Length: 437
Image (cartoon, rainbow, N blue to C red; front, side, top):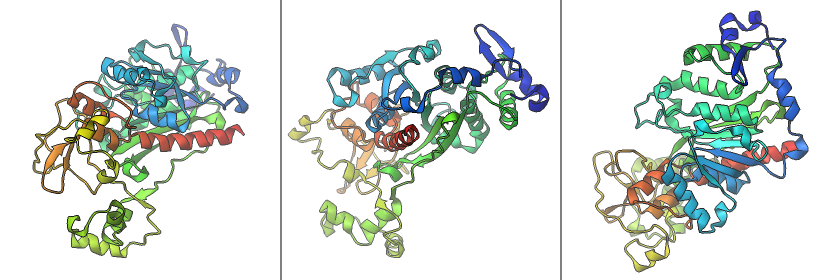
């Protein structure tokens, strides 16, 4: 641990360690967080079997579902919103195998003692409320009481997990939030470091930056990697950008990086306008294929198919096998009731069948005009059914949603795409298994 001279007066006055009800400045003579870590350090042989997570802000369960499929099972899902918790509980009560063993807890996370889960969970996951950073919100960030990243940090501090996975909206990476995003990642890197109650976040950011640059043992520390990813690049049939923040405890020396994309827009252009394989796979007659812009045709002929991997998945891919919601057979699917009345507005038309879906909005002011809708080939436009929205977000067909159409769509739109969560979770689990050997 560095001295006051090594870290700077501001940093040393700011960097504190919680000791019961008291706060004291860390010094070289004080017991360091590393001492405490070594007392409870997890041997590599104990990593598996059993990567188990504590899920914060579980929402509709999209992140938890994908991570569970990848092998990171939740010991508990903590959520304040009653409707969200009820939505998950319906699936637990139905005996759905995808949520077998799940336990939900409705609570205000600020009242939770995370150390109570230390004997069960060795990972922390979740999606802190994104309204402070949403492009459709008020962009208040740290001034917004709904910014709950502090709870993610506290969970890491109290649980000392092997690692964590958090996701949020792309707005978090906006230039206007860049300093605050750095502040979030530094807090997660050094979760044992807390602040005096009267410090501003800017003062604390400077202190954390100086602490990072200081020499000596820094105690509980995480190697944190963040990335803005497009869900379509990983097999989700919609273009949606999400920020993932992944951390591994530094003593694991994980050296992890995000998985590379496996799909591309260019490959879709080739399949549609180059070799026409997309239309042939979907058995779409030439007369029913939309006319491609000449520029896209020219581009498709220039692309090398071997370079761009698999193609983006489209709405047509996602809805394959789902009957017309007006038909009698639609009753065989959960949440697949027809909903008409959609209208297209300038710049807000419905999603096209043969492209990834547009964003499924999760706004608080209802469904925006022209959004959450499907533009059919005959000029008709209608709203997605709840089941179609769930297909777009890669939820399994047997996963049920309760409540009104608008509330269900809002909850689905706010969830992390299950497939994207799976891809990132599988990569994390793979690395943990390698470390455990």
